[in-house]
Image (tube, rainbow, N blue to C red; front, side, top):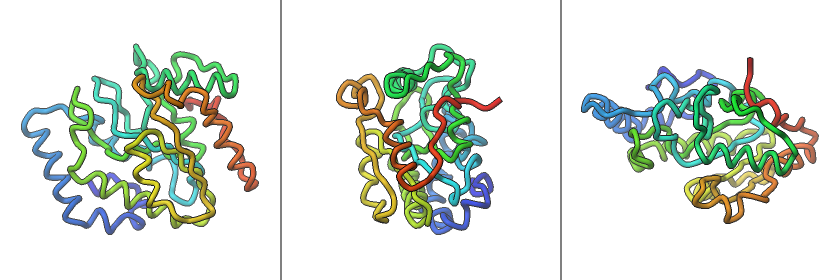
Length: 229
């Protein structure tokens, strides 16, 4: 899978990619497919989040748990699904609901691939980057955590200010990796139906992100740009 990682990222995460943990992860994914199991997202999209923004241009990291496990949902950007997918996953519906409540942004129901955010410097990352069909967290503890930890360490070392948004317990365990004082960290419950009412709704996370950026004279994210033509 190493060849799928963009060159702009590879040098910063090469230690993880060359590790025994990553080799074991690749073997595990090969076995999953050889055994006839469906794995999401498609292999070509596993590192898609990194395709849209190099490390030096990351302004925001939204960190989730693992990809959607339903058919035709996961596209390699955390919380995103294809624009034409119906129905939308509940977590994404809740994200757009909070966006509307926070900023008064009404999003067309067909806009859901979040590429517009990614191309503005929002890294849409999960702690685990693949999943077996219909089995949430089925690929945890197989090596992905070592890789995404290295991604976060690399981002922690970036000179520009980054706002790290940790949604849910799996993401919040990564806070210990983010020690540089010029970054900002925002934590909220996960937007899933199980936890959205425990503090995700009403968190005003999108306006808080932009306020953190503007305080450092960084252009805010245009959250209305959900998708790109």
